[in-house]
Image (cartoon, rainbow over all chains, first blue to last red; front, top):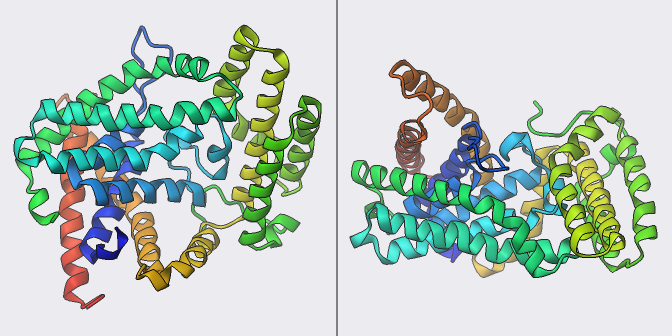
Length: 186
Length: 199
């Protein structure tokens, strides 16, 4: 997979990792009926998959996660360092590269028919489905919770994630129409 | 120059190379998950706090590092109280507390550049499979260089959109940011290619 990573790919990967960091500067949105604020973090994950494809999107988010592990305070609220990988939400963070890869793979497979609706569906599958598929079992094991309890506790984040998937779809569709993306991708 | 959460100091943890520190951290996390007794796990918390404070970091910083995950850990504990046993809850909280403190102590005492060198060293053996660790180094360096550039772009865009009354619209903020990042990436890739890197 990594064997055919060109210089251009590396630049895209690095700039999307940096973009992911910058997206976290967008202040969290508080929606009245939700107990937790909506942060932009998984929005960056969805966008990377939608816009630069599976390999580059996945590696960009992997690079971002690596930068956090190296000690840069890039997560929402200025969190970072090795500590976040030993907290309850570690599984969710570790799932992000896989999520971006899956969203990117689905997007590449269906590039000719992409529109906002498909971007939304693929963002939901990768950015919500995969993230919870990895994050919830991880949380259950790390916190000695049952799978069901861990899933229940994670449900509060789903409405915010759906809002983000809508935003990611609208952004991806607008960018797709205004900038040549996949021509240079392959 | 210091970027990130590293703070300058001369404690014993500062003097230790990155490799042994990360190794010890992984060993500690494995040990904690093998310990089944809540009491032993709870005893590990003050030890971890001691390690953290021995780096010379002020206690206020310790509290700040724990405040982020505190809400989630509190949720976990409440779930245990409501649906399981208090013992399991205490064990989970003690594990998280200990490991977060130890991991933060490593991050606090290891510069980002040293951690990046460790990653390149760990990836070294992959070279014989045609994998190039120095490409990872290039990607890390580029990303760190471009985080402030893109953050600055974000501030420009936010001001411009605020002047149009669109300051609170995520679409109006992120679309131009993404397009500028893509343009910057294309220009940068052309520049690198023009100089014959990797040719």
